[in-house]
View 1 (cartoon, helix red, strand yellow):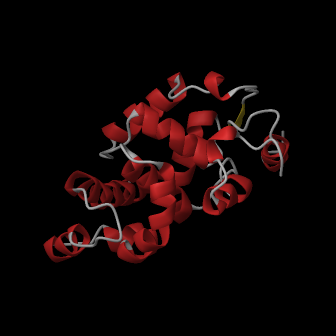
View 2 (view 1 turned 180 degrees about the horizontal axis):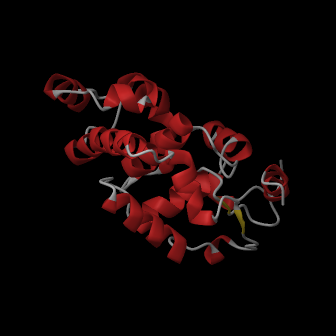
Length: 192
């Protein structure tokens, strides 16, 4: 594919992520939760670092099953902090466990996590029409509002910039450049 968004470079893992996942509307609870956690783990690191460790994260965090993660105890926490195959950051590990608990708290209150997240864009992916990477924002009013809602519900590592990256990854916004063939493909998936 020519004219890909310039951020993905040439690394095959990054290219595959760009071509098959980034910007595709995600309505699966576990996949949406995984992307939220991985975006938080990425803070201060490159996304390629996270992609290279993704399978290790999936193993360490038991497939990103919120019900399993919410039951993690001190022994699990120590196991995670000793696991060199993932990001061993105490605050990020604790946030992952806390975020699983926050998600389950939403469910206990009768709130569908996926619908609740998608309310950010009124249930329909926002279609942007950027021509240059320099035009793509790091955060928006919607990502700031989502961040506030998440934090109020007990989620952590969900600042406006992390939320916007998550919205891009999960297809809440289509930020493929208009010159990228994936822009039209993601717009078609969104029904635009």
